Length: 231
Image (cartoon, rainbow, N blue to C red; front, side, top):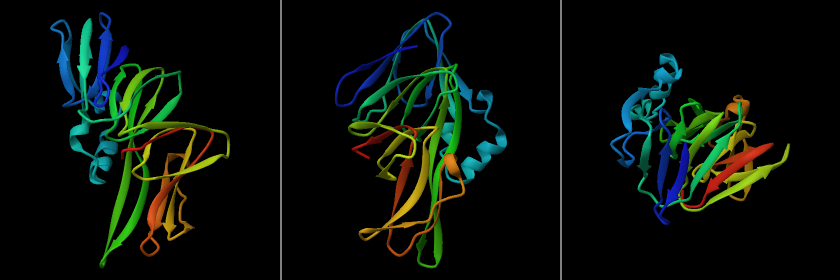
């Protein structure tokens, strides 16, 4: 797959496919495709995601429509757009290299890239007498192959050394390499209250919110971290 960005404030992604080459994208973001391109629907089950895992994700509130992808087969050109302002990133993954992209930002990926939906972080808040559970869903992509995703606003990238940490909001996070540990923390006034653990590199498992605290994410290297400014 060759991918190019077209436009500025609200970019589109122009894909150039060779004969027989296949690319998958989320539904509802197609602008146009040439008549030579074949289009069909692919399920997550056909990509190796088990039915039990899909049911578990849906029970937690993941979008059922995301269980399906559009598959384009070349030769020809395809143009995709999320119809939102923000930087688009085109990334090539080496074999076994992985990246976790916050749900709602993935645009397209090569058929050779392994896709797996996951919960990146979880926390609980109190609403009156009831507890509400919140999740950050992510698309885990493992190479080899290319993929395209788009942030909201400007995208900032950081290369973290082992043990190095940066902090971001739950809305500011865009993507992390799968070598990065994601821990949930709480901002209480000007202080931090740590209540993370349990999920390791699979994400931060937060407990209940202390008072009127705001959840934040501690991202610990090694690996690449991306945040977006317009979240």
